[in-house]
Image 1 (tube, rainbow over the protein chains, first blue to last red):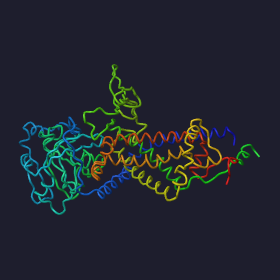
Image 2: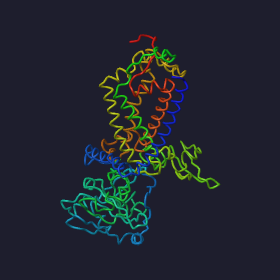
Image 3: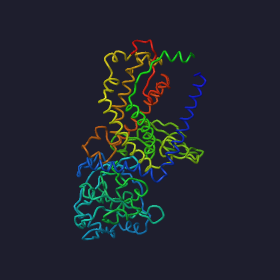
Image 4: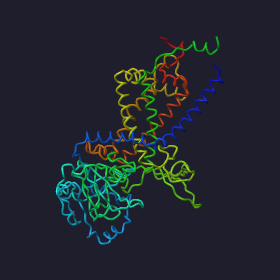
Length: 257
Length: 281
């Protein structure tokens, strides 16, 4: 073999590698647009959920912090002012006319005022909020224990998920934010419907009058502006069927990582 | 007999890389590429790094990529590292999207999977292949211990300990090992491989898991040992670039020490060494 052929073989290889990487890059984007690949990649989420649920004790508690760890200002993300006339009217009135409805697969559907919610067994916790985008903030939350509320409405035997219907419109098509969690998370002691942040009534940018706190998952699970709870047996009838606004747009239903 | 034929007779081949090592090596190479690029896609959703548990503690980020408009109304990319700002337009902070328009972006689209700003899809890629990386890393560590690849080829010997200085000089002068010495990994090579296999890969997996709000609850306080969730995210990022640095040095060494011979040996297993230096078996 002469040096010349060796050289051309090398430059050919270099060119092949360069074009292969360009094709691979474009290919990754094309693959992401297919229907099958995101499904295959979604197996990662399933594995994560199975393994995390397997190794984590049901009542494993999220780390709680001290007052001095509090973020000076708790960041508002996603919707910070729901542009909805009915919600704005409620907010203008200090949420005195607000009613939380709890229905679906329950024996005793309920409608609760904010005072009723405040009257439920409560919990105060200083926890770290982890956003799917990568940032974290620490806040002190006080709210009604969701488990206590659900015991009051008596779940039917086929109840599996709690769906949160929210006030904030997403986009212009009339869709409002929605989320869902399963019973294991719903009855976790740190799962609360928070009405206070850092010792003050929850403000509009952070989800007034009620937002879910689900301390072992990412921020988008913690629905703000919660208006009603619907207890269901499966999630197929909720939104586009994946159980949440962001889930229907490609995010994981189980947001444990 | 041609020149190259005669030259060939002065070489002998030996079986250097077992099939499992070769397979896991190439799986790893592909995985690290995908994980780096999808990881940078995830990073772009919040292109800043912090130390501690929280991003909003009142302290400034350690690293921040952002964009701002200059006096002419053009978008400029800025990188802020420990308070020092650098213009990095076109690469970090602001770069051109597929339509050629300058947009705010941490890392440019040619470094991310997917190329567009699409956090949900970047996460899917990342968490799917992260599982395979975990399996591949555990498989490699188990295989190297049970097959004695670890003891035979990777664990530095006493003689290795004495040859660190010489090996350092050899590397700096780009001196190629010959004969018997070429049959073994040199001491710096051993440290590099051990560092990647037993330190960097397990660490980057652990730091990835440390960002999970669920796994944080497994053993109370374990994430705080590393400084907290945002520190863990920062370490994950640094280790990723340490792996990139390793790969760059690794590729450089592969090229200067005979690209074809090294490349082929990682495909066929057979590595060619010169005869006449030390004992040939």
